[in-house]
Image 1 (cartoon, rainbow, N blue to C red):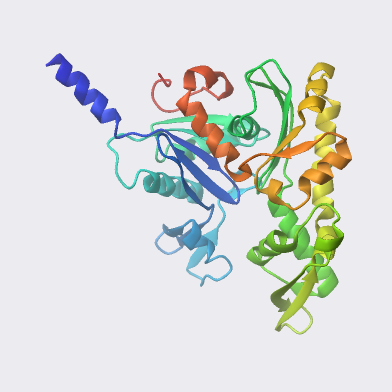
Image 2: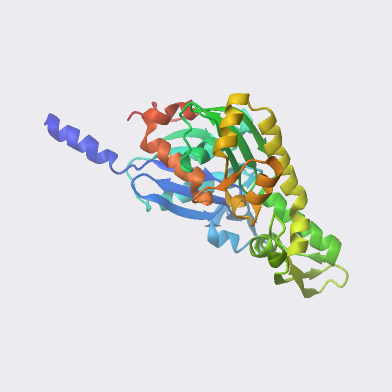
Length: 357
């Protein structure tokens, strides 16, 4: 009977899979233990204002941005890396967790969520409470630490490593050693700010208004951070609303002018990296010079971003193997080896007892 009880307890826990979440301003990614990254969707929720219920979440909701009637509101629950709309964030997280569990599971999962290192205790609590909408235990980890683990940097060893994670709402710069953050800076300038700089440039230079999705598409297609004579002559046609006539029109942009449009937020990111290096202890700074800077997040995919940082700092900058997945893979790695990596998470638990492996 005892053996049968043990079997039942073991079998019961098979219905609960641990989940790592990169709760990003632009996209949310989910890593499920034993499966890897199984979900990558935009952090967008479409709400029915009359019924107060979500109509769509993720990719389907993103298609509704800027296109909804009066009774439907498509929103991004996170701004600058923190929760701006708690109810929408709670619904989004719950929906994504249900998708990850394929709509079933006897026990709610335990989760690790990556968060910006510079957020306040109130903002941390909001993330925890939103996470508990679909979980039995919630643990938080600073995004630069998760990104470093996901990029296979030796964060627990006595050696200095530098990670720069450029996401949608925040840029995280951190120097790590022995499993802890030695120096860090969290900058609320990242992908969204770059998109806004493109939108502002088009209004000022071409008297054209474009939506958020169009700005992002321009950034992806012809955005760059470092001069390249061949690429600067790449052209891209866009459509928007002409501010003078109020009518739709098309214009053709070249990559060189978009690089100039993006220069201000990119320079601010570089300055944050320089400030962090200036505050780094000499021994760790020597390690970074030898090992280089690791670049992660969606911003790592901006053409020439690593070249710009290398030129401005004099330190070779690498792009991680899979920059978009670094944070979520780091969260998953922590759950897979919690005993070794438990000291890097925020261990105050809002759910039940602490994690036991």
